[in-house]
Image: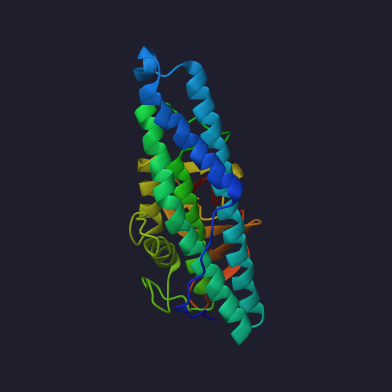
Amino acid sequence: MRIRTAARRTALVLTGAATAAAVAVGCVVAAAPHSAPDAAAPSAARQTAVEQLVQARLAVLEGQADRAGRTAQLADEAVLEHDTTANRAAADRAERALATLAAQQTPELDGLLGRLTALGVHVGAPTADGAVVTTAALVGRTKALRAVSFARKQIGDPYVFAAAGPHRYDCSGLTMRSYQAVHVGIGGHSATAQWRTAKRHHRLVSYAHRKPGDLIFYGRPGAVYHVAIYVGHNRMIEAPYPGKRVREVPVRSFQRLSQVGRPA
């Protein structure tokens, strides 16, 4: 079953609180050159203030991405359950809203990171799962959500060995195309190659800290025979094997590797 992309766009606007936070960050940064002689080396207090503002802004942007991604997921699921004109239109709007959000967030996030770098402020503190939280990582999150949306649109397409779309896929062909749709390379048309690429680029994360968009691998390290894309709620989308179609199913534990790949 497929959802056709509509030409209509849906605009998303920043909340007042988000704008205020962004302005505050800009004011702190702009004030630096006019400070006392130690402006070239920002004080610890100033750095702390900037970090707090950036973290507040990141929380706003992350909330926007989560809401848009969840809306797109629910809309896609509604089409799979009831393929009606109204549901397809709603899914198209939700997908375009998610794409618009990513386009809106990217320049602002890059700008925030650039200003912080100029101040010498480091905000890349590791999180509990070992990931580094930066503005670039948040841009990657919106890409991961869009990759999930792409994969979900292929549900119902037949499994064909060595196929990578359109309209037919094998396991690694589906994950590769899902990320190519958001301009992220994950290592080519091979489950093992995708695992090795994630390992080489330090993109392997504990399965316990999985997030939507992560790649779930089956087999053993260095010899992976299957890959799927995690969509949340302990479910994944996969192109399983000959005779089956692309589907969304609960994550299987048998022969699942203990780490997932996080391409974006």
